[in-house]
Length: 364
Image 1 (cartoon, rainbow, N blue to C red):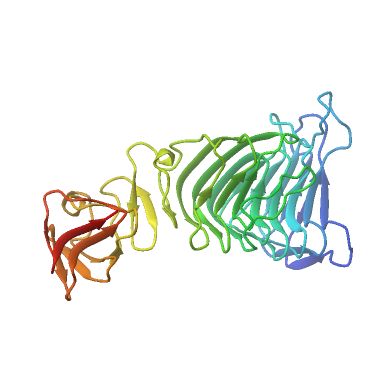
Image 2: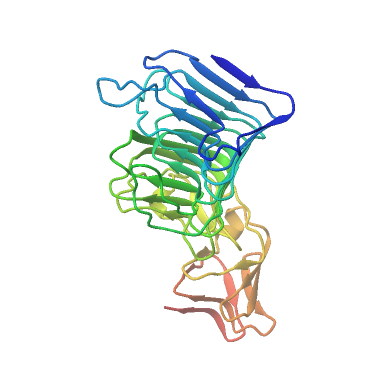
Protein backbone atom coordinates (compact mmCIF):
# COMPACT_ATOMS: atom_id res chain seq x y z
CA UNK A 1 0.00 0.00 0.00
CA UNK A 2 1.27 3.47 -0.91
CA UNK A 3 -0.45 6.58 0.42
CA UNK A 4 0.63 10.12 -0.44
CA UNK A 5 -0.81 13.33 0.99
CA UNK A 6 -0.03 16.25 -1.31
CA UNK A 7 -1.27 19.72 -2.15
CA UNK A 8 -2.01 22.18 0.65
CA UNK A 9 -4.08 21.16 3.63
CA UNK A 10 -4.36 19.80 7.16
CA UNK A 11 -5.29 16.40 8.55
CA UNK A 12 -6.79 17.20 11.94
CA UNK A 13 -7.23 14.30 14.35
CA UNK A 14 -7.55 16.39 17.50
CA UNK A 15 -11.21 15.44 17.93
CA UNK A 16 -10.21 11.86 18.78
CA UNK A 17 -9.11 11.68 22.42
CA UNK A 18 -6.88 8.60 22.20
CA UNK A 19 -6.10 8.02 18.56
CA UNK A 20 -3.08 8.64 16.38
CA UNK A 21 -3.48 10.66 13.23
CA UNK A 22 -2.05 7.84 11.08
CA UNK A 23 -1.38 4.22 12.10
CA UNK A 24 0.87 2.06 9.91
CA UNK A 25 1.35 -1.71 9.82
CA UNK A 26 4.22 -3.64 8.32
CA UNK A 27 4.58 -7.28 7.27
CA UNK A 28 5.88 -10.33 9.13
CA UNK A 29 8.41 -11.22 6.41
CA UNK A 30 11.10 -9.07 4.85
CA UNK A 31 9.46 -7.39 1.87
CA UNK A 32 10.18 -4.03 0.27
CA UNK A 33 7.72 -1.10 0.37
CA UNK A 34 4.86 -3.02 1.97
CA UNK A 35 3.37 0.15 3.48
CA UNK A 36 4.64 3.53 2.24
CA UNK A 37 3.42 6.87 3.59
CA UNK A 38 4.43 10.24 2.12
CA UNK A 39 3.57 13.63 3.65
CA UNK A 40 4.43 16.39 1.16
CA UNK A 41 5.85 19.78 2.10
CA UNK A 42 2.59 21.75 2.27
CA UNK A 43 0.66 19.19 4.29
CA UNK A 44 0.12 19.40 8.07
CA UNK A 45 -0.99 16.52 10.29
CA UNK A 46 -1.89 17.26 13.90
CA UNK A 47 -3.17 15.39 16.92
CA UNK A 48 -3.99 16.18 20.52
CA UNK A 49 -3.61 13.23 22.90
CA UNK A 50 -1.74 10.65 20.83
CA UNK A 51 1.12 10.40 18.37
CA UNK A 52 0.77 11.89 14.91
CA UNK A 53 2.18 8.76 13.22
CA UNK A 54 2.38 5.40 14.96
CA UNK A 55 4.13 2.40 13.39
CA UNK A 56 2.83 -0.79 14.98
CA UNK A 57 3.66 -4.46 14.53
CA UNK A 58 1.75 -6.86 12.31
CA UNK A 59 0.15 -8.61 15.29
CA UNK A 60 1.89 -11.96 14.80
CA UNK A 61 5.00 -12.69 16.90
CA UNK A 62 7.92 -14.40 15.23
CA UNK A 63 9.70 -17.46 16.58
CA UNK A 64 11.88 -15.12 18.58
CA UNK A 65 8.84 -13.83 20.43
CA UNK A 66 8.99 -10.31 19.03
CA UNK A 67 7.05 -8.67 16.25
CA UNK A 68 7.85 -7.33 12.80
CA UNK A 69 6.94 -4.34 10.64
CA UNK A 70 8.90 -5.12 7.49
CA UNK A 71 8.47 -2.89 4.46
CA UNK A 72 7.27 0.18 6.38
CA UNK A 73 8.52 3.47 4.90
CA UNK A 74 7.65 6.93 6.21
CA UNK A 75 8.58 9.99 4.11
CA UNK A 76 8.02 13.34 5.80
CA UNK A 77 8.48 16.73 4.11
CA UNK A 78 5.56 18.57 5.73
CA UNK A 79 4.65 19.51 9.29
CA UNK A 80 3.62 17.11 12.06
CA UNK A 81 2.24 18.60 15.26
CA UNK A 82 1.46 16.46 18.30
CA UNK A 83 0.13 18.59 21.14
CA UNK A 84 0.58 16.27 24.11
CA UNK A 85 1.91 12.74 23.48
CA UNK A 86 4.40 13.30 20.68
CA UNK A 87 4.97 13.18 16.95
CA UNK A 88 6.47 9.89 15.72
CA UNK A 89 6.45 6.54 17.51
CA UNK A 90 7.51 3.02 16.53
CA UNK A 91 6.56 0.15 18.83
CA UNK A 92 9.36 -1.22 20.97
CA UNK A 93 8.51 -4.86 20.20
CA UNK A 94 9.52 -4.31 16.56
CA UNK A 95 13.01 -5.73 16.82
CA UNK A 96 14.19 -7.06 13.46
CA UNK A 97 17.58 -5.54 12.62
CA UNK A 98 18.16 -6.97 9.14
CA UNK A 99 16.22 -6.96 5.89
CA UNK A 100 13.64 -4.33 4.94
CA UNK A 101 13.25 -2.92 8.44
CA UNK A 102 11.08 0.19 9.00
CA UNK A 103 12.61 3.34 7.50
CA UNK A 104 11.88 6.96 8.33
CA UNK A 105 13.01 9.72 5.97
CA UNK A 106 12.66 13.13 7.62
CA UNK A 107 13.42 15.35 4.65
CA UNK A 108 14.67 18.92 4.25
CA UNK A 109 12.12 21.44 5.46
CA UNK A 110 10.09 19.01 7.57
CA UNK A 111 8.93 20.23 10.99
CA UNK A 112 8.04 17.85 13.83
CA UNK A 113 6.89 19.52 17.01
CA UNK A 114 5.33 18.53 20.33
CA UNK A 115 5.04 21.38 22.85
CA UNK A 116 4.11 19.03 25.71
CA UNK A 117 5.30 15.59 24.57
CA UNK A 118 8.26 14.04 22.78
CA UNK A 119 9.39 14.84 19.27
CA UNK A 120 10.27 11.26 18.28
CA UNK A 121 10.05 8.13 20.40
CA UNK A 122 12.21 5.55 18.60
CA UNK A 123 11.43 2.48 20.69
CA UNK A 124 11.49 -0.18 17.98
CA UNK A 125 14.31 -0.81 15.55
CA UNK A 126 14.29 1.32 12.41
CA UNK A 127 16.57 3.27 10.11
CA UNK A 128 16.22 7.02 10.49
CA UNK A 129 17.48 9.46 7.85
CA UNK A 130 17.25 13.14 8.77
CA UNK A 131 17.82 16.08 6.45
CA UNK A 132 17.62 19.81 7.18
CA UNK A 133 14.53 19.30 9.30
CA UNK A 134 13.40 20.52 12.72
CA UNK A 135 12.46 18.13 15.54
CA UNK A 136 11.29 19.74 18.75
CA UNK A 137 9.82 18.18 21.89
CA UNK A 138 9.31 19.18 25.50
CA UNK A 139 10.02 15.77 27.04
CA UNK A 140 13.00 15.38 24.69
CA UNK A 141 13.74 16.02 21.05
CA UNK A 142 14.46 12.41 20.11
CA UNK A 143 14.21 9.45 22.50
CA UNK A 144 16.41 6.59 21.29
CA UNK A 145 16.06 2.98 22.43
CA UNK A 146 16.98 1.16 19.22
CA UNK A 147 17.91 1.82 15.60
CA UNK A 148 20.30 3.53 13.24
CA UNK A 149 20.18 7.33 13.09
CA UNK A 150 21.82 9.64 10.55
CA UNK A 151 21.39 13.38 11.09
CA UNK A 152 22.41 15.78 8.30
CA UNK A 153 22.12 19.47 9.23
CA UNK A 154 19.14 18.70 11.48
CA UNK A 155 17.79 20.99 14.19
CA UNK A 156 16.83 18.97 17.30
CA UNK A 157 15.59 20.67 20.44
CA UNK A 158 14.51 19.56 23.89
CA UNK A 159 12.53 22.31 25.60
CA UNK A 160 11.20 20.80 28.82
CA UNK A 161 12.49 20.60 32.39
CA UNK A 162 15.84 18.94 33.04
CA UNK A 163 15.77 15.39 34.41
CA UNK A 164 19.30 13.97 34.13
CA UNK A 165 18.40 10.59 35.66
CA UNK A 166 15.05 9.36 34.35
CA UNK A 167 13.86 5.94 35.47
CA UNK A 168 13.91 3.41 32.65
CA UNK A 169 10.47 2.35 31.49
CA UNK A 170 9.30 -0.70 29.58
CA UNK A 171 6.16 0.98 28.26
CA UNK A 172 7.37 4.42 27.22
CA UNK A 173 10.19 6.82 28.01
CA UNK A 174 10.31 9.27 30.89
CA UNK A 175 10.95 12.96 30.19
CA UNK A 176 14.47 14.37 30.41
CA UNK A 177 14.39 17.67 28.53
CA UNK A 178 17.40 16.52 26.47
CA UNK A 179 17.82 17.04 22.76
CA UNK A 180 18.99 13.44 22.26
CA UNK A 181 17.95 10.97 24.99
CA UNK A 182 19.40 7.44 24.90
CA UNK A 183 17.92 4.83 27.22
CA UNK A 184 19.38 1.39 27.78
CA UNK A 185 16.60 -1.12 28.32
CA UNK A 186 16.86 -4.92 28.06
CA UNK A 187 13.38 -5.26 26.58
CA UNK A 188 14.30 -3.51 23.32
CA UNK A 189 16.38 -4.26 20.22
CA UNK A 190 19.19 -1.88 21.26
CA UNK A 191 22.00 -1.73 18.63
CA UNK A 192 21.96 2.07 18.52
CA UNK A 193 24.11 3.72 15.85
CA UNK A 194 24.34 7.51 15.64
CA UNK A 195 25.92 9.65 12.92
CA UNK A 196 25.72 13.45 13.06
CA UNK A 197 26.87 15.62 10.17
CA UNK A 198 26.03 19.18 11.10
CA UNK A 199 22.93 20.81 12.53
CA UNK A 200 21.98 22.04 16.00
CA UNK A 201 21.30 19.83 19.03
CA UNK A 202 20.13 21.99 21.89
CA UNK A 203 18.45 21.50 25.23
CA UNK A 204 16.91 24.65 26.67
CA UNK A 205 16.99 23.38 30.26
CA UNK A 206 18.93 20.11 30.21
CA UNK A 207 21.67 18.22 28.38
CA UNK A 208 22.26 18.14 24.66
CA UNK A 209 23.09 14.39 24.79
CA UNK A 210 21.89 12.20 27.64
CA UNK A 211 22.64 8.47 27.98
CA UNK A 212 21.62 6.63 31.13
CA UNK A 213 20.81 3.34 32.88
CA UNK A 214 23.29 0.46 33.00
CA UNK A 215 25.22 -1.02 30.10
CA UNK A 216 25.26 1.24 27.08
CA UNK A 217 23.48 0.12 23.92
CA UNK A 218 25.28 2.59 21.65
CA UNK A 219 27.42 0.39 19.41
CA UNK A 220 28.70 3.11 17.07
CA UNK A 221 28.74 6.90 17.06
CA UNK A 222 30.25 9.55 14.82
CA UNK A 223 30.07 13.35 14.93
CA UNK A 224 31.69 15.24 12.04
CA UNK A 225 30.05 18.62 12.64
CA UNK A 226 27.22 20.35 14.45
CA UNK A 227 26.39 22.74 17.28
CA UNK A 228 25.75 21.10 20.63
CA UNK A 229 24.36 23.26 23.40
CA UNK A 230 23.17 22.36 26.88
CA UNK A 231 21.58 24.66 29.42
CA UNK A 232 23.96 26.96 31.27
CA UNK A 233 26.35 25.08 33.55
CA UNK A 234 25.49 21.60 32.22
CA UNK A 235 27.78 19.31 30.23
CA UNK A 236 26.93 18.61 26.61
CA UNK A 237 27.46 14.87 27.13
CA UNK A 238 25.93 13.36 30.27
CA UNK A 239 26.57 9.62 29.95
CA UNK A 240 27.02 6.57 32.17
CA UNK A 241 30.40 5.16 33.12
CA UNK A 242 29.65 2.29 30.75
CA UNK A 243 29.55 4.55 27.69
CA UNK A 244 32.62 3.17 25.91
CA UNK A 245 32.57 4.89 22.50
CA UNK A 246 35.82 6.80 21.94
CA UNK A 247 37.37 9.04 19.28
CA UNK A 248 34.00 9.67 17.65
CA UNK A 249 34.20 13.48 17.36
CA UNK A 250 35.96 15.10 14.40
CA UNK A 251 34.25 18.49 14.33
CA UNK A 252 31.55 20.67 15.81
CA UNK A 253 31.09 23.30 18.51
CA UNK A 254 30.12 22.56 22.10
CA UNK A 255 28.86 24.59 25.03
CA UNK A 256 31.01 22.65 27.50
CA UNK A 257 34.41 21.01 27.57
CA UNK A 258 34.65 17.59 25.89
CA UNK A 259 36.61 14.65 27.28
CA UNK A 260 39.81 14.05 25.36
CA UNK A 261 38.95 10.38 24.76
CA UNK A 262 35.95 11.41 22.68
CA UNK A 263 38.06 13.40 20.20
CA UNK A 264 39.41 11.68 17.09
CA UNK A 265 43.12 11.45 16.39
CA UNK A 266 44.68 14.53 14.74
CA UNK A 267 41.92 16.76 16.14
CA UNK A 268 42.12 19.30 18.96
CA UNK A 269 39.66 20.92 21.35
CA UNK A 270 39.93 24.73 21.17
CA UNK A 271 38.44 26.90 23.93
CA UNK A 272 36.89 29.94 22.28
CA UNK A 273 35.11 32.93 23.82
CA UNK A 274 31.70 31.29 24.21
CA UNK A 275 32.18 27.71 23.05
CA UNK A 276 34.56 24.81 22.57
CA UNK A 277 35.51 23.81 19.06
CA UNK A 278 36.88 20.53 17.70
CA UNK A 279 39.08 21.01 14.64
CA UNK A 280 42.49 20.19 13.24
CA UNK A 281 45.35 22.51 14.16
CA UNK A 282 45.42 25.39 11.73
CA UNK A 283 41.86 24.85 10.53
CA UNK A 284 40.16 27.09 13.07
CA UNK A 285 40.48 30.79 13.91
CA UNK A 286 39.40 31.87 17.38
CA UNK A 287 36.85 34.61 17.82
CA UNK A 288 37.84 37.60 19.88
CA UNK A 289 37.72 38.64 22.65
CA UNK A 290 38.85 35.30 24.06
CA UNK A 291 37.95 34.76 27.71
CA UNK A 292 40.41 32.65 29.68
CA UNK A 293 38.21 30.30 31.64
CA UNK A 294 38.82 27.95 34.58
CA UNK A 295 40.54 24.81 33.35
CA UNK A 296 41.38 26.25 29.94
CA UNK A 297 44.72 25.48 28.35
CA UNK A 298 46.24 28.32 26.31
CA UNK A 299 49.20 27.53 24.08
CA UNK A 300 50.60 30.83 22.84
CA UNK A 301 52.71 29.19 20.16
CA UNK A 302 49.51 28.70 18.16
CA UNK A 303 49.35 32.46 17.56
CA UNK A 304 52.18 32.02 15.12
CA UNK A 305 51.60 28.52 13.76
CA UNK A 306 48.03 27.50 14.50
CA UNK A 307 46.05 29.72 12.18
CA UNK A 308 44.74 32.07 14.87
CA UNK A 309 43.99 35.70 14.08
CA UNK A 310 46.94 38.09 14.30
CA UNK A 311 45.31 40.09 17.07
CA UNK A 312 43.37 38.71 20.04
CA UNK A 313 42.16 40.27 23.27
CA UNK A 314 42.21 38.24 26.49
CA UNK A 315 40.00 39.19 29.43
CA UNK A 316 41.53 37.68 32.51
CA UNK A 317 39.95 36.47 35.74
CA UNK A 318 40.67 39.73 37.61
CA UNK A 319 38.97 41.74 34.85
CA UNK A 320 42.25 43.13 33.55
CA UNK A 321 42.81 42.96 29.84
CA UNK A 322 45.76 41.66 27.89
CA UNK A 323 46.38 41.87 24.17
CA UNK A 324 48.35 39.50 22.01
CA UNK A 325 50.00 40.62 18.79
CA UNK A 326 53.02 39.33 16.94
CA UNK A 327 53.35 36.65 19.61
CA UNK A 328 53.64 39.25 22.39
CA UNK A 329 51.20 39.50 25.31
CA UNK A 330 50.93 42.84 27.10
CA UNK A 331 48.68 43.84 30.01
CA UNK A 332 46.82 47.08 29.24
CA UNK A 333 44.24 49.38 30.83
CA UNK A 334 45.89 49.05 34.22
CA UNK A 335 45.63 45.28 34.24
CA UNK A 336 47.59 43.45 36.88
CA UNK A 337 48.56 40.52 34.68
CA UNK A 338 49.21 39.80 31.05
CA UNK A 339 47.53 36.44 31.65
CA UNK A 340 45.68 35.47 34.81
CA UNK A 341 44.34 31.94 35.32
CA UNK A 342 42.81 30.08 38.25
CA UNK A 343 42.96 26.27 38.24
CA UNK A 344 43.98 26.42 34.62
CA UNK A 345 47.01 25.62 32.49
CA UNK A 346 48.91 28.18 30.45
CA UNK A 347 51.60 26.92 28.09
CA UNK A 348 53.88 29.70 26.83
CA UNK A 349 56.28 29.02 24.00
CA UNK A 350 58.28 31.51 21.97
CA UNK A 351 56.27 34.42 23.37
CA UNK A 352 56.83 37.62 25.35
CA UNK A 353 54.42 38.39 28.20
CA UNK A 354 54.26 41.75 29.99
CA UNK A 355 51.82 42.76 32.74
CA UNK A 356 51.31 45.70 35.09
CA UNK A 357 52.31 43.62 38.15
CA UNK A 358 52.74 40.10 36.77
CA UNK A 359 53.42 38.79 33.32
CA UNK A 360 51.60 35.54 34.03
CA UNK A 361 49.72 34.92 37.26
CA UNK A 362 48.39 31.44 37.97
CA UNK A 363 46.61 30.18 41.04
CA UNK A 364 45.54 26.64 41.88
